[in-house]
Image 1 (tube, rainbow, N blue to C red):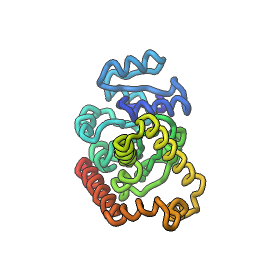
Image 2: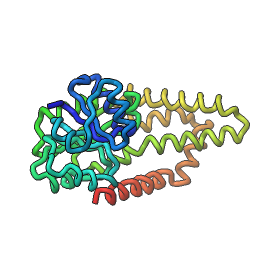
Image 3: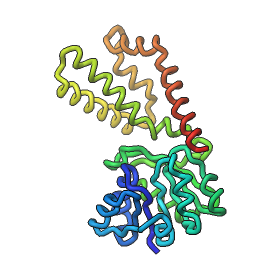
Length: 262
C-alpha cells in the first residue's frame, strides 16, 4: 500500500504533490484526477495513477482530498465501499463530520492551505479528529512544512481561518492591483510601479517575519513620521473605516465557507 494518494490535481493538489515528492518519493505516491490529461502528465513523470477514486482508496493509506467543496458529496458517493484509512481534506469550509457521516470512525485531518504553497512559501492551518493517529498527523504536518508555515487550529475556527490565510492572497493581490492602477493613472510606467510595489511588499513581509515579537503597530509608526507623508495616507484609511471594511470582507468570506460546508 502506498503512503499517499492525491485525489485532484488542480493548483493545490499539484503543489502538494511537489512537496510529497520531496518527502516520500514517487514509489509511495498515487494520483487520480477525472481529467485524463492530468493523470497522464503524472504518469509521464513516473508517478502511479489510479483509474478511479475507489482504486486510489484501496491502494493508499492516506488520501489527500484536493477537490472543490461543491464536489465533496459526489466524490464521497463515488468512494462508497472503499473507505480510506486516513483522509486529509483541503476542501474549504467542509467540516470533518461530513466525512465521518459517510465513513464511520474514519481518521480525518482537515487543512486550510493557500496558493503560495506552489512556490514553497505557503501557510497551512491543520486540525484532526480523535480517530487520527499521532503518526498520521505528524506526516501531514511534515508534508505541509515542506511547502510553508504550519499551525494547529481548533476545528471550531477552521472557517474563520480562511480569512486569515486561505483567501488572504486574493486580498493582497487586489490591493496591489489597485495601487498599481493608481500609479499608472499618475503617469508612472506600469513595469516600474509593479516592480517597486512587489519588492516593497516582499521586504515588508520579511521584516514582519524576522521580528515576530515586535508589535505590528510599531512597524506602522516607524514609517509614519510625525507631520510627514505616510501619516496622511493612514489617516484616510482610518477615516474611511478600513478596519470595518476588513471585518465585513472577512465575515462574507467566512459565511460563504460555512454555506459550502453544509
